[in-house]
Length: 117
Image 1 (cartoon, rainbow, N blue to C red):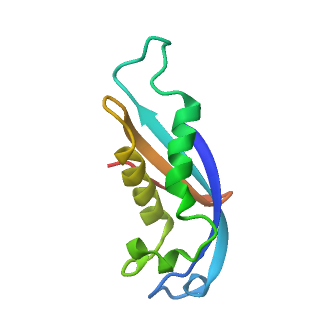
Image 2: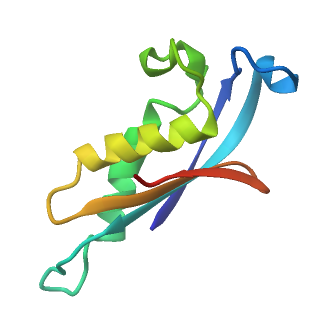
Image 3: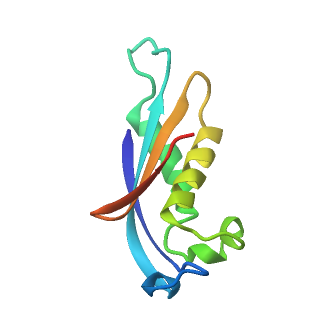
């Protein structure tokens, strides 16, 4: 698992409450990877490599209004959907037998959502 962070703003369409207004978060994102096989050094993936992949995925989400991204024009950029987005985009960069097993997106220190199909 590697953990990275981003800062971005969003608002939740159709939500009744404070979150329907534009606001920002310092999101923490944890990406868990699994593999049925280790390489010759005894690792599934080098943390450095995984961190680079996750950083590339998160780069698009950092310091922006998430609602303006094509992926969130029609659906809310909720923590749940951000976790799914990071899961799917990270998986595209991994070679078999590596698989993303779970992504957790922390909206605050006390609130998170995870995605693991």
